[in-house]
Image 1 (cartoon, rainbow, N blue to C red):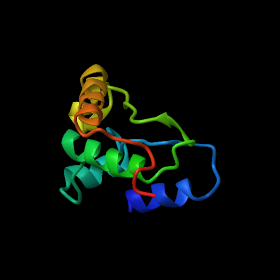
Image 2 (image 1 turned 90 degrees about the vertical axis):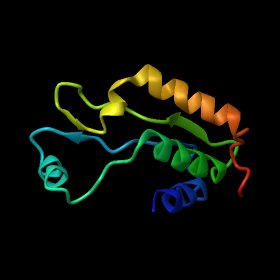
Image 3 (image 1 turned 60 degrees about the vertical axis):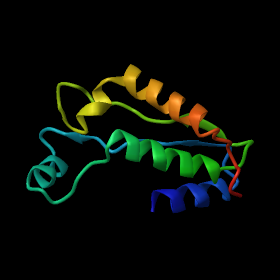
Image 4 (image 1 turned 60 degrees about the horizontal axis):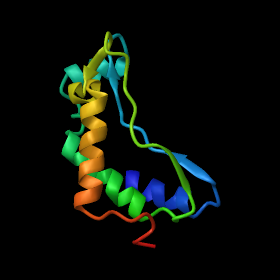
Length: 107
């Protein structure tokens, strides 16, 4: 559904998009569901793969304002890898270079 949403936004005429990772934060209903095993969060490599597929489907002239975000470390339950923003951004940049990612290549 994430990739379908990016395709929709890409075709909507919007000038820009923010791509955001789901964070599970302590003290929320979502955290209760996560701790009950009702869903899993993405691993870093999975998230990067989804980002790449989204970007390939966005028009080259569309501004990407955000590739990820970070939840307050004090309340972060999952995914814990997202707490190391420098590592996350380096992994994203490395993958984009390795995969020769081009925005709009799958339009």
